[in-house]
Image 1 (tube, rainbow, N blue to C red):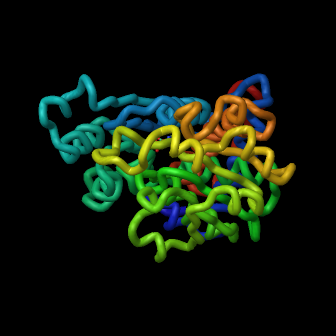
Image 2: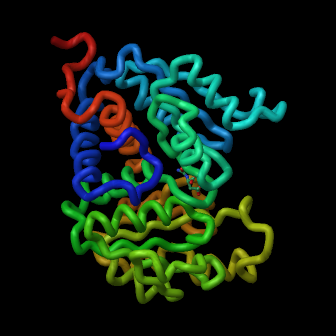
Length: 316
Ligand code: NCD
């Protein structure tokens, strides 16, 4: 593994499989009475969040703590960023405090890359979502969840549905899944598929029903109203009718097909409540798998892949 995790596209198939296999070991820790490893004792992980987040921030915090790292949570609201401090000065301050890893979420696409390339930090930079660009650990946890249910993803068909235009989750998933050999189809209204999607390693379609019948996994995306400054579809009702996953549509899916959603969900919009809570849905599992995957990423970036996973704290 390299020093940073900025894009899902930077991961070779070998890297991605190493993260997923390591996450599998990390996950087995959750079944032990003591859920903590000493691997990152004395290391400092900073969560640098310039944008609202519930699950991603908590997930990174839980992951770092289970590896015995010290965690500093930095939210832009209430910090000197609201007084106009730049990303550079914030990063230099964190560097002066000895951050070994900076987990960054930022509303601007490219912010984590800037942080890593400008060398404002000596530590590892992990992209936890930048603008509409990428969210590599989300793609890794999605692949991990699919792999647990479907086995090797080579040749598997994954349909990603909805607001692809604003979705860093869709972009990272398209890159990672194609690296892992899966066949990805993006489905959404023409207004919500990005210009340039033709250069992505995916198929595209405007018709949900014909795509989902051949899918091994269907990933629903949140309609990101906060990033929309114009009208991308006629009405919420029309959107749900054409691109929402409801009970009628779910009945079209093959028996083994999984339903995923990165959260937060708009219940009743892109996914109906009964589908979200159905036995096919692995949405809650995605959240718990997220901790194992982020533990694996922190572990591999900070302690190097050659260090064996040690016995849990308190066990010998
Ligand atoms: C996503 C995000 O923030 O990119 N959520 C997440 O990290 N679990 C998707 C979204 O906001 O819709």
